Length: 263
Image (cartoon, rainbow, N blue to C red; front, top):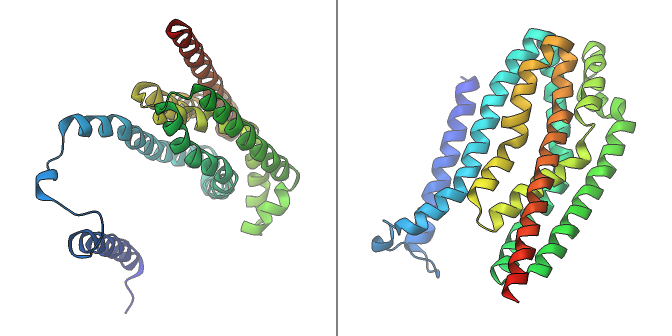
């Protein structure tokens, strides 16, 4: 007897439950420096509000990504059928791999930036931001070149179906056209999150998927069919990077003005 899809669903649920129970056991019964204390379970509303204002960015981003997935699958099927959906499956896997260096640098960037900004070491903040942008963009550029040159070989790792290969190769090349700009969007959103600016963080986090990509997917395929969906990705990356740079420029200008007033 096999459970098929039900077994996969139950294994996911059981793994979450086991993780929760172990976490409770670790903090409630084991000897460690962190303990669960009843009076702190209700929390401080001021702290909760601050956590929610920053954490809601991730909630909004994931919600937008879910809505995008539904829309994208429907449009891919409408304009390219099952082959287009399979092609995007390969595109998304390659995209995850290419984005890993920029995401890793972003995750390391946030705590260091937050520490230096809190200490009002703004020269370090500027140098750190420039350094993170330099390395994240450089790595993205290298991967961009690799993907563009070796697209057929990369696609052949996932499938040997000629019809799928014919759709996936141009799909990858179109969707990755603005790959070097991804680092700007990621680091720009992370910058405002690290300094506790919830509204700019929310806006910049939703720029690509929510503000640019979803409308472009709704519009472009009506004029360019399936290629319109693939072109929506680099156009949204360009738009998100441009707005992010504008925000970073004006934030730095305001901070420079503030420092001159102090001295």
